[in-house]
Amino acid sequence: MGFFRKDKDKSEDFSPHKTAGKVVLLGVNEIAPNPAQPRQTFDLEALKGLSDSIRVNGVLQPVLVRKTDSGDQPYELISGERRLRASKLCGNETIPAVIMDSTARQSAVFAILENIQRRDLNLFEEAAALRTLVVEWGVTQEEAAAKLGMAQSTIANKMRLLALSPKEQRIILENGLSERHGRALLRLQSGESRELAAALIAEKHLTVRETEELVSRLLAGETLDEIFQPPKPAVPAPVAAPQFPVQMLPPILDKKIGRKKARKVLLVKDVRVFLNTVNQAIDAMKHAGIPAESEREDHEEYIEYRVRIPVQGKKQLAHAAKSG
Image (tube, rainbow, N blue to C red; front, side, top):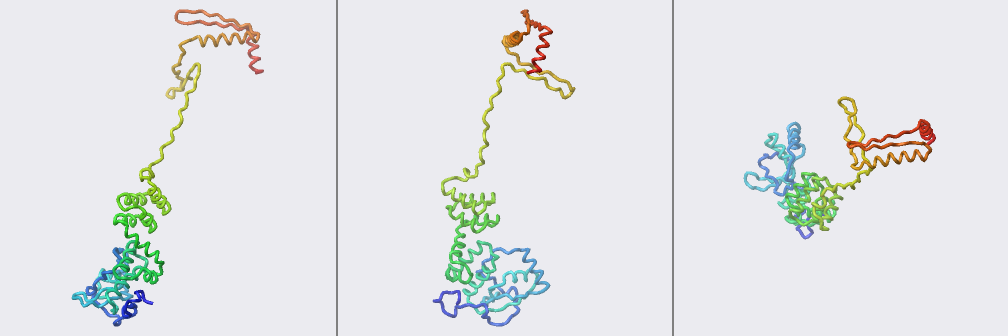
């Protein structure tokens, strides 16, 4: 069964094996490129490699052409664009070719199908080729699906990718994003926000699943700034400073001279706190049976405090410390 609609004339059935003759040598400048060629870019390094091979081994597989009788280029290329370009690159003036008996429509459809089946078109070249088949050459999606071994829904989804803007397509290609990334982006309205989303997806190397989640959040009303805003650092709870009735700072070691340097001591304005502490200590000794005595003399610039502890009391204090 051919890949044209059944209502077409049987003469439109196309087979690449129908030829008008054997292999012939044609001038490379006699062959016009196929206007339906879906490939838009050619890898120059790969072409150079093929050119070197042709220079040594020749063209191993003839190109396919059809006769057009259009002046200086009486033949139109059906298949073999890379071989023709590489032959020109290495300076060959002729190339082996098979002249096929086909119409412009048959030639275009065959060239498109062959390139799609090679699987080396980028995803937008493939989508454009499928659209050309369906829109310009009247091949139905069902016929194209049967010829290419794809589901009809697959062809429809591939063609939908052409709704992405040229800038969005460039972002996807340059960053190696997949067809599924592109389909996820299509859920957003076209415009600057979708282009910005595509750029952020590429910049942050989002997976397909992460891209779909991002699109869902955008459709739910979140903005890109809200989604990609860095989390605010947690503010630690304030720590209350320790409270001491009297604060005295210990001496610190002077690293330069290896000696201790005394820091300033924070004094309490009311020295009665110290005096009460001394009095409490003396009272405690008296309750323990130690006849301690104290004398206080107030001078204009200082207070003098003298404490007497009997020797027997000193021994009792030492014993109490050991037993405690």
